[in-house]
Amino acid sequence: MASRGRASAEGGPGRFRSAVMMWFSPSRMEAEGTTPDYRFSLANERTFLAWIRTALALVAGGIAVDQFLTDLTWGLRTSIAVALFFCGAVCALRAVHRWVVCERAMRRGEDLPSSPFPAMLAVGTAVASLLVAAAIVFGVTR
Amino acid sequence: MSEVRDPAAQPERTRFAWRRTTLAGGLVVALALRHALVRDGGWAGLLIGAVGVLCLLLITFVAHVRMRRLDTAVPAPSGHWPVLTVAAAVLCLAGIGAALLAVAER
Image 1 (tube, rainbow over the protein chains, first blue to last red):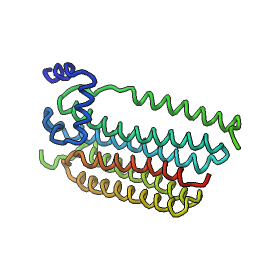
Image 2: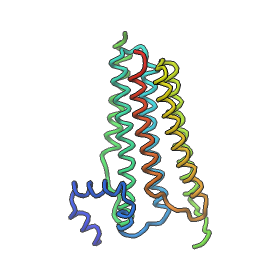
Image 3: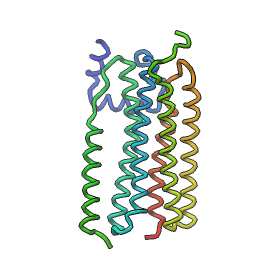
Image 4: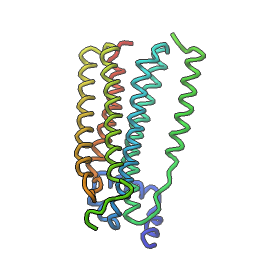
């Protein structure tokens, strides 16, 4: 496919930059390929919303940690909360980026891009919850 | 293809996804308001909580517009602005969480 050859020639960083430019430029997006079946776009929208809910869950977790884990020391509690807020913000940004990149791939008729982000988030969440459980069990409390 | 019903109910599923997202936002703002009241953030805490309510209203408004536009046989896909607006509101909520930590009693 011609579009695929052009895409691979574009390379990694340049491709990322052009996707980020597409965040704020609907016309740049519409210049790519053809409009896909609306059902694919709706599926992409739902995936975006699922990531947004993931981000909201992380933010909610951060606020909850500060309210409900009051036995932990202030420093530890605040560090966990700030880490969760940061992850929530990253998730929200990545939700937009993923939506743009998938929409572009569908317009071009390319495969959807793969990404290590879900696996990284899963491992990060697992490690973080183990650390919090350890902090509670082994008493990093005041 | 006029008025063909989508057998996979894609518009309906997408509308429910917007509904769920609004509810998740409501949970975050409820927790933020509880934080402002329980952890004694004072007036600053309440002000930050009010900004959170505004973020929730923004998400609700975007969801409402999207849900109305999805209520047709062949709905229009989401453009840029609903995606960017909702993401900005969530970023704002993350900032509100951090701000609540800053103003709360230790």
